[in-house]
Length: 239
Image (cartoon, rainbow, N blue to C red; front, side, top):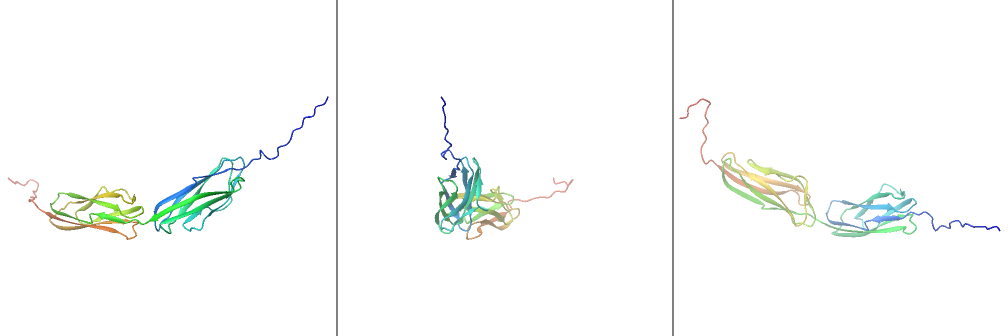
């Protein structure tokens, strides 16, 4: 007898499809200074077995957030991924919105990402604001620790330190630029070493992103001779 065996062609259950994965599912910015911007990244991956096309990325009505992408669509082959940059520019002390990634994934044509951010202003306080070194013998040295404190609500970025005045120097200052979080401080050491007698004034200047501008601290010190010096020519008899 003849036995006919029939084979049914697939009806689409095994059809290749893209599969989008967006991570992280939320982006958070913390205490970003007003007047600045901060960028964070999203990773979009294709975990499927067909090409994924990112057709667009849209952000909610809050104008503080923007997506840095040249053009759409963005194609991703199976197993590939790409980085998407999201920039936050503060408009109020608290901003929140949603970002939507649109693609040809049949199961998840739109993926939402939460955007949450806070902003503030840094404020630099130098402690002590002034210092009197008193009277020092010439060529002796004394130093004071100046605490650069951020008493504001956003990160302080210090870009330049300058000490002026005869006899005054900065001792091993920290590398520039450096940042100071709200409620934290950074010590900077100023030394005074007079080379002659007399009164000397000094000034310490800090350039930062404090909206108030350059911060200053004043110093004063006095040098005096506590002995005498004799210059002897070579071969001279001083007995």
